[in-house]
Image (cartoon, rainbow, N blue to C red; front, side):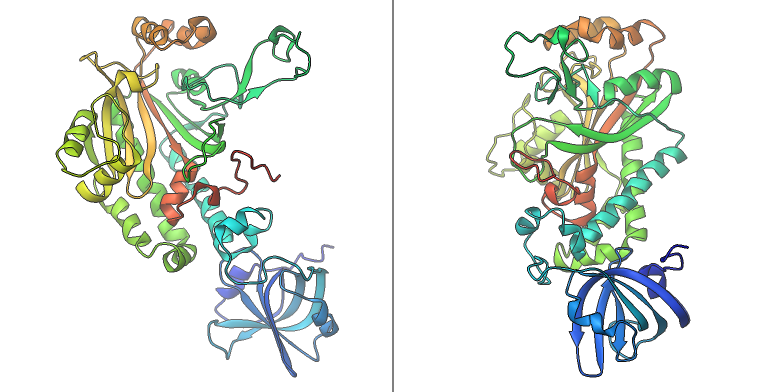
Length: 459
């Protein structure tokens, strides 16, 4: 029989409506206060943000263990759930039995209540035990389920696309190589490598996903992607997660419709299901967070062409570090101006210049732009990037050649344009940036459990 078979989660006990006898809890000690007659332990098991208070007296079996129980220790408690006479909690547990499951050393680094994010990044294996990072983890979990729930409700099918690939979706050349070759052997060739050709970690599941789009109509993938970009900004990592849907019989406007509906759906779920955790971020991270999230939910997202965006920026009379010019990408400062000052809400920018977008994006009739769209949101900037895909074989081939792609490497992709091609569209949403939007956290390294950045590989 399991020792913890009858164990209750703290969240269930905190939300109880009546006293309970013989409850069982287990978790980690957040604080301990010792007095002559009673001792108080604040216990957290990760199920929710609030702790539950444990009262220990001289009649408690195991009371002698108190001297060995430090902040961070793991304990198992049996007792009665009773109304609390203290402030700050409705219920508390009067312990009848106390067990020490895991001691904690005196130099445990989370003794203080507040630590800097920079310090906690150095001990990423322990930071989920703090209020902030346990809240981020719960919100991330909630949003993950919300992603799947949304697409299932909308009739999409989940497709698991490969992590190891021979294709470069973006053409940036910033890919991690996967090989079994001995780097010290100068005579090694890719023909003798595991796959018999050059292989990489994927930067996107899109190209593979499109093949299933041409069979299942509406599909999506949700998984890790990788960039070997040597960037140390607050918005980039070497490993991150992407949500990527693809829809057959859809154009750029359908793409924007589903992206807006999706973002509003998952933000709405977080507002309802993660209310307690979100309040922590309102209190300590961003006091305007809930107002900004409600703005996302209540606004009709603005829609402007790239050309209109450049005109707005140039006519703003604002001095930008990077002068807005047609044919150049929008910078972070431009995104902030459009979302936070001009429109004061999320903005779709669509119909981008051909030269700054990927080969697979559908060319418009003007021969200068492609049917691409970016969704910009306040504070975060770009959250979604998508497009109608070029389904016309001749134009796709020309685009690939113009951008330096070897069509022989993409024979399978081109084959979908030869056999039952159809108009289709899709987008990619950076999952960590979504979490940044929902929590107000400003550094992307703090919203993923195990950040992978240049010169940083703790695990």
